[in-house]
Amino acid sequence: MNFTVDFSVYENGRKKPEYTIDSDLNGEISLTELLEFTKSVLILTAQEVLREEQALGFEKNPVVSVDGRIGKPVINVNPFGTIEITAKASMNEIILETYNGLISRSPVLTGRYKSSHFVFLNGTQVANDLSSLTTWLATSPKFEEKDLIRFVNVQPYARKLERTGVTAGRTKTRTVTNKNKKSGTVRSRFLQPNGAYFLTGRAIRAKYKRNSVIKFTFISGTGLGISGSFKQSRRGKPGRAYLYPTIIISVQQGGIS
Picture (tube, rainbow, N blue to C red):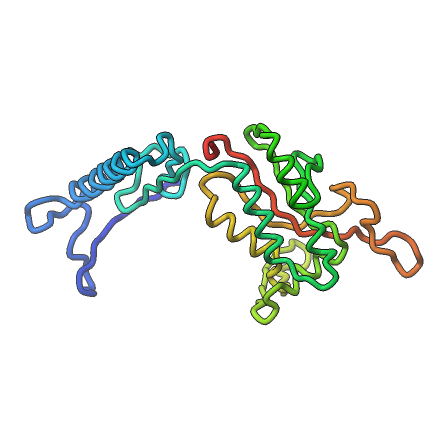
């Protein structure tokens, strides 16, 4: 497959481009040279700002994101791209902030839901309340690349609470389109999650997305080994498995201190 890329600059809504990639800007500088200049200024500005902040105590080995990609060389930044520099974060801090976010957003009626947030490391349970979590973190656990920290509420009605949401009045309906070879296009509508896990996951991801991979989803109770994780059918036999809301944090060594 062959394709070409063209670049044009329009001025004041004129129908024809005032400048193209091969023309001169006022006969003084070509657009190609202008783009190279813009790119150089972007890189030099980022480097200068970083030096100034590091002189004030900023992270000496920060996380650098170029055009939204961690690991992309700064020299390859797009002329109108972005260079984001983020300090590394403590994994303990991310975990504790996530747990506190779940507690603060938990709806309370009997208190069972709020007291049922469990934490797992690579499938092994490490905490079932804030006290046991802080005790575990105090042991200074070592995290390796792509370790998985999972937060999950083990109450069987947790999925329903996640769907109805802690701000139920603002719950939105979402339409998803799937293509099926046999039946054609199928569209389904469902309530977008708006509960403690979705909202906490969104907040933590917005703050720490350059430090680790953070994801909200649902998980089957059978995958966690939770007893009584099947709904009972009318005939008294096990039905489909319960789904539980979960936040997963995949450790990225380059983003944590």
